[in-house]
Length: 299
Ligand SMILES: Cc1cc2nc3c(=O)[nH]c(=O)nc-3n(C[C@H](O)[C@H](O)[C@H](O)COP(=O)(O)OP(=O)(O)OC[C@H]3O[C@@H](n4cnc5c(N)ncnc54)[C@H](O)[C@@H]3O)c2cc1C
Image (tube, helix red, strand yellow):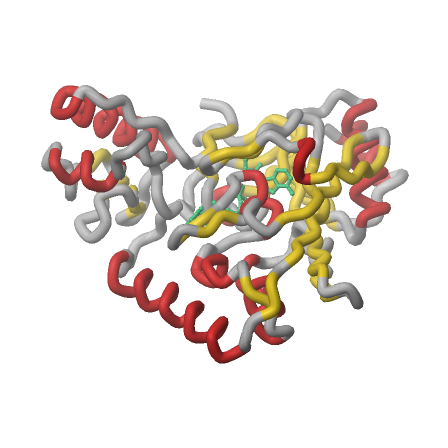
């Protein structure tokens, strides 16, 4: 790893950490270390980093807020990249919002509100970065981040390219993305609206969350995707699984589609619990649940 670090350091000027525990960067608070953890200073720094990692054939993963990510206990053999410094959000003259992937969903939603632009109100309650939200096509309360998107900027070792929305393949909690591509920025065209109405819609979203998701323990939001025409939480609830526990991981007693860390859980606890939930839901309903949470790293 010393030779690799030296090669990276020769061109990369951002922060570079070794054996960084990914449990510090995920909301489930589990996950072993990444061999390398890099925080590029800006886009150019990210570009040289990606180029050198690809030349050295070092696997890489982007970590946003880590709110939808389960990292296995042995961690990630490669380089985890945080875009937290690539976070500029701006409203252009033509009313288009131009947003970098390291920006926070909440800040983007508030920026739209301040400028009287409507369409991203639902984003106010979704924790994480814009990059993660785009990767997951995050949504809530009937809205999805792709609804008002016009284009995406993707980066790989060759450079940055702009992709119009119509060229992208996306769906429920999903964007088809080649593994070597990093989402670096997005543009949104929103409808003009009154600030008061936008603020009221955001308050409404936040209130609904407070009512349904008073989950006190570390979690990753909805763990399983909703199967077509059904809700995962109801299937889990109907199978009688609230409170089911493996080690420190538990099916939340408050929201049946949240798996929570009651303290000291490992990634293995979560993975075993998720398997048990899937088996029992299948036995009870004949429906196979699939994880919404992205799973990465080594066993
Ligand atoms: C309490 C709670 C409530 C939640 N409510 C909702 C909800 O209502 N709706 C909803 O959709 N989600 C919800 N989530 C899940 C989560 O907040 C979203 O999926 C969010 O968009 C994840 O963003 P992130 O930055 O944390 O992504 P991460 O968890 O860091 O990453 C998610 C995936 O995206 C990839 N990724 C991240 N950034 C990039 C990038 N720039 N380029 C390429 N790939 C990238 C990662 O490699 C990973 O595969 C909730 C989570 C919690 C904890």
